[in-house]
Amino acid sequence: MYFQLRVAKMVMVLLVVTCATEMTSANLITLNPVADGYWKYKSGTTILDNNASGTLRVGREKITTSWYKDRGLFQFDLSGINLSLIESAVLKLTFINKYVQVGDPDLMLYRSDYDSWAESGTTLTGVPASGLATTQLLDRKSGSPLTTNGQTFTWDLLHGTSPYTWETTSPWVPTDDADDQTLSLVLKISNNVTEEDSMTSQRYYNFYSKESATTTYHPVLELTVIPEPTTLSLLILSGLAWIRRR
Image 1 (cartoon, rainbow, N blue to C red):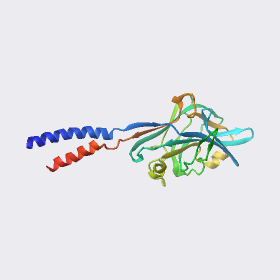
Image 2: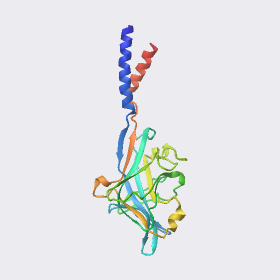
Image 3: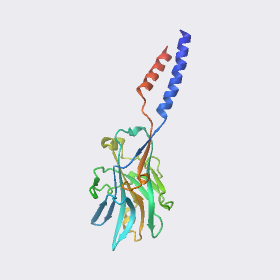
Image 4: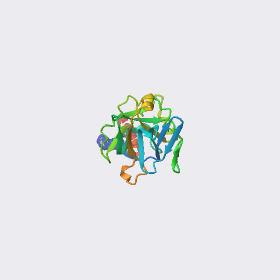
């Protein structure tokens, strides 16, 4: 009887080790946006563009005599993903070119509370680019490394350079995005709205949108997710507990 239990324990330990590896090995999930576009705004005028040309603009630009600020918009469907098991979350965009008259501004990635927007026809409906609190800032990156068409640039939603992250930002709680299974992101320059509005030099970046003819250039959200324990895993762990009691 002792020998049988000893063998059973050894087999169970091997199974648990295998099972533990299965449970802790993260899976990579790559999501394309269900909607993207850009919000071009000046006082009293808003233009919402769905990037039919395959280009998304972020920054500050002058059109004839009017100054506009441009913000990139992205929406991702989180259906079926357990947010509490996400280990990493990275937004990847592919650079086209830039026009910078004076200095490369930083690029700021925000999470938006507003998910009720979508691509519609040749434009967008809704404007999730307003009301961005400092506590919604996810990551801040210098724009200076952006030099070559086709270059990939990334923002870290969980471990960004700002003190705020998708995981811990107050007053955000996981159920905010889990309830409607939607994540909306906004990319802009400058954390200071007054500074952004008062810029008198053009500084903007062009990125590929999901409408680009080159699919490898489309925006993506890459998530690494720890698999949830399987029924087999739970049964094995229960069996080990029973053997230990013996």
